[in-house]
Length: 271
Image 1 (cartoon, rainbow, N blue to C red):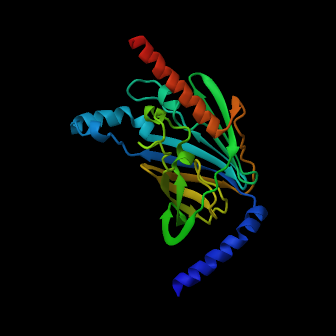
Image 2: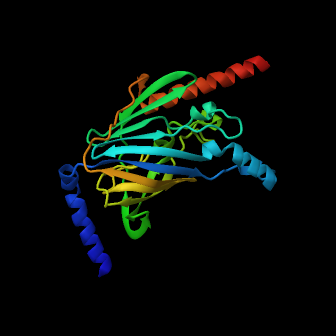
Image 3: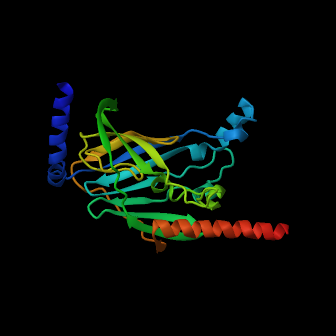
């Protein structure tokens, strides 16, 4: 009976959500900590615990990051706070080629704008927002002062990592018979709070009836550690505007072609 009552109340909340967000102007800033588990695979199995700790220390800038989400009812931008490497005193320029750039979402226009840089060239990626098909549950937990509800979704892996590349990506996505391999799906778990009635969230995540305060996918978790709410929409939210305009698909093709060129040049020097 309690479960039926909860679902009934949730349905009412969802039906009124659009009205509420239009009637109540909200803006704010949320700070998120991103933590990723270090996966060393078979190579890591040959390393001692001491060596693994040294590797983790050197990769800390890539495994632990801080982001700020500025948002209102319809727009948001998601920016990383740049860190200086504690060991070398430098920024992670090479790693920056394969990480998320400044990220802007416009919910009302279903628009994504993201700045990326690769080998000194700036790109302005413009595309449609990917709509996540969330399944909302009844589980709750507290994140800070906010009561959050759990939601899950299966999302095409390419939608979450189109800006991330590895040398393995250069291999054709076909099996031994030459058939195209089916797109992999990633399980995403999010915790959102209706107490902040905006359909925003960090990174690629959005579309729930409340701000997403925690989200996990693969080995990475984004957790909100601070929220500052304004009762108006005065927080400045601007989309990136510099770089060559390109779609997500064409950006992926461009980077892979450049990486393939690098591999070919290296083989040519060896020969």
